[in-house]
Image (cartoon, rainbow, N blue to C red; front, side, top):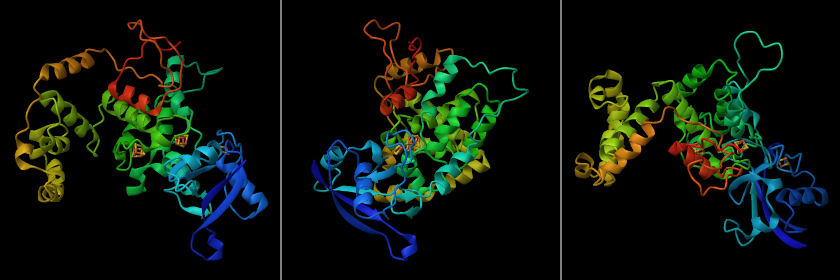
Amino acid sequence: MSDFALKVRRYDPESGEPAYWEDMSIELEPERSVLDAILKYKADTDNSLAIRCSCQAAICGSCGVRINGQSRLACNTQLGEASEELRAHDGTIVVEPMGNMPVLKDLIVDMDAVHWKKVQRVVPWLLPEGDPPEREYIVPAESMIDITQSMACIQCGACVSACLSMEADPEFIGPAALAKAYRFVGDPRDSQTEERLRDLAEDPHGIYDCTHCFACIEVCPKDVAPMSQIMRLRRRAIGDYGIKDSNNGYGHEKAFVDLVEKYGTLHEAQLLPKSFGQGSLIRSQIDPDSLKQLAGSFPTVIAGLKSGKVNPIKAIWHKKLADQKQVKRIYNEVESRGERIELNLYIVGEDPSDNEGEGAQEPAGGDRAGADAEAGKSEEGAIQ
Ligand code: SF4
Ligand code: SF4
Ligand code: FES
């Protein structure tokens, strides 16, 4: 047994008092969880301390809180580890309610007001067409594997709590709901794939509102890698359906890819106008909508010039990479593939052409999932 110091954020709206910190000292084994410590304090000292929990086994998703500033499951965080990590202040474990959601009481946030509302926004059920089959729907195994990762979500809200875009734009549909959207976009029984993608691409708070900060991947306790699911939604929208959205998601991606192909590195000065022109520099200067968007970005450009962040000479004369052939080789290789291969990234294994691989199933680490997906890496033959 050891003594653990906890600092817990408390708030009771009925008291009329502002939120405050309460210091606690709990004696428990280091292997026990932060949730165990809070429940012990409730049982022994103050039963009014509020926290949501049920399974105590990282399954139900109820006990999401922020521990030492990071969104996690209280039942899945050991006291010993939490007190020793760098984020802890002098060994004190700091426990707060999750972010980006209103606090109802102490460590309980209003999941209905934010998380569940956003999940409902993506129509989280199948929309099949025609009469249902007499017996069950038969779905190719590969298709179900493709969506297994998004199906692993336990709706804990940790990613919503950590999302930086949602902090800046509370209307952003957000990581958990968009991961749920991929679950249905990737399901071959659904008949509204294009409509769903168009809807999420056209929404100003939709798939192009994510800023790739990786926070959701870092905190997710189930390796759902929500950001990777959002990137897959974008690839489906652009690559499979050519959806040219009014948020310039299509234009931005096209401009980015074309510029790197031409220069080897990103020509920042051309990125903005080309993005507004759906990938075309000429269109950005003649299309009234593109011109309007371009004019709207001038204050940012001027601020960049004033602060020295933008160097006008470097911005205009962008040098090509010395060995442009290598860049071209990568583009040729990717473009020569007949189709983009999207497989669930829980499943990794041996590339048949690589004799060194062992061929194994292992859970995907978020970063690996993102990296493989971004690289469009082929995992053909990877399913064991
Ligand atoms: S990667 Fe995107 S969705 Fe995930 S936390 Fe960052 S901004 Fe939010
Ligand atoms: S994606 Fe992960 S972090 Fe987000 S709600 Fe689902 S399980 Fe929790
Ligand atoms: S209590 Fe169920 S996930 Fe923590």
